Length: 143
Image (cartoon, rainbow, N blue to C red; front, side, top):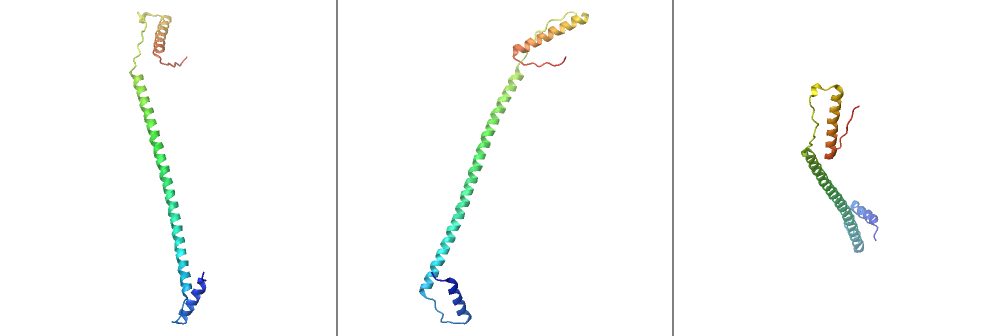
């Protein structure tokens, strides 16, 4: 291949000295054209490689975004089902009626403190029995 720096220096010298009969050999012109075409081809290949890499990156980002969107959609569906199940359970629990058969108290105002406390204990026991039969977990506190 022709030394392009040498050819350029010769052409500059001819231009500076105004040599109108400056001649370049056909072989040099063909080699310069071949070098130019090779350089242009390499530039195009590099540009294509860069475009392909950017396209691959964009496709990967699109894939990851689609995956995240699908995961979010599945998560939202699962949360919606859980919420509906919880609402149904709450509605079921709220619709239940608890019937408690309280012992009858006669002459409550005439009871002694001992009888009154005994009557309260019987009422409390009736309430506990009713909640147990209904399957309600009752937590009691106090002394």
